[in-house]
Length: 169
Length: 169
DNA sequence: CTCCCTGCAAAGAATTTGCATCTTC
DNA sequence: GAAGATGCAAATTCTTTGCAGGGAG
Image 1 (tube, rainbow over the protein chains, first blue to last red):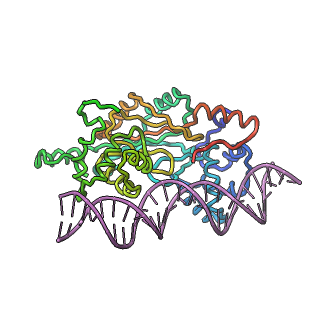
Image 2 (image 1 turned 90 degrees about the horizontal axis):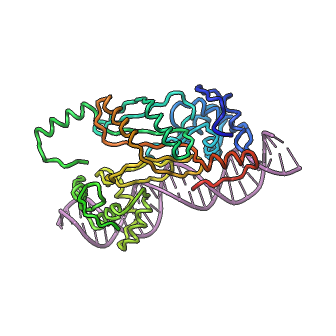
Image 3 (image 1 turned 60 degrees about the vertical axis):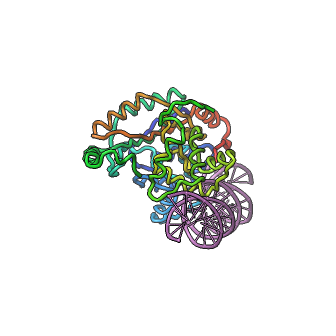
């Protein structure tokens, strides 16, 4: 009733989620859904509807892309997957129960990406969600900045060519 | 609405950004672009290409939606707007130089979006960036969860009768 | 005068919906 | 047996592209 199932498995085992599935009001546990669920459990990383359909195709029991599309929202509501936010125009998802969750620190100059974990931030996020009456189920955090190397390189350039640049593309 | 005279780059004044615009390699400052820029300066909150076109229409100097679409990426590269990430399939933008920066709390059930500010999180982000030698220039944070209403509604529905709920889009 | 910009129409890509048929409970 | 689920095709929605005329530098 309230949040979720007491069981919060960290593995990708299908059996852990059959239950959830049937808890979605009025839905039936069809073979298509088992297949989809199975594919999700085996999928590492983010995926789009089509990626999932493709991986299902490889499993040998093809499910229509339309059916995948129809089930993704259901699975999201069931807490099986979560929609992740990639600045793009496609719906990306990922398993909702991945054990580790790291965030990204991205250098806007050279594109370097550093992964990090910072429990304290997670705690505050819970706090914010709570303040607004939300039950937090996930988050997406990206920090943009300039890495050490690029800061140095930049400083050198400015010494050579002072004041000439306001900002560039 | 506000004719405040604070000449800070944090305000929505067009003049602050003309320069930037012309710095995009090879672009010209046409009247269409001025109009678009102007509309962006007056736009509070996030907008999609069409919202902007609509607001421009209201300004009286309509610009084709196609042109808006063609200019948004340019403006993003110029640092005038930034693409915000709302878990949806449309491209949302917001002015990049808004003084206040709020983050989003998104209900995965009904799609409701709540904006919030939480300075403490910002501080921690600075800390994380610092630990990795980064100079923080921006961030993007979205919290996904279930809002109070949906938590209640969900509980009720599961108890009584499953019915379709309003989802946006 | 040369490119770049714009608008229109049309193309694309991602996702949703109508409908007849097949399944699960 | 009935409420759901599925697949196909068609419809939508958002965004991009081709092309010819118009404008900025």
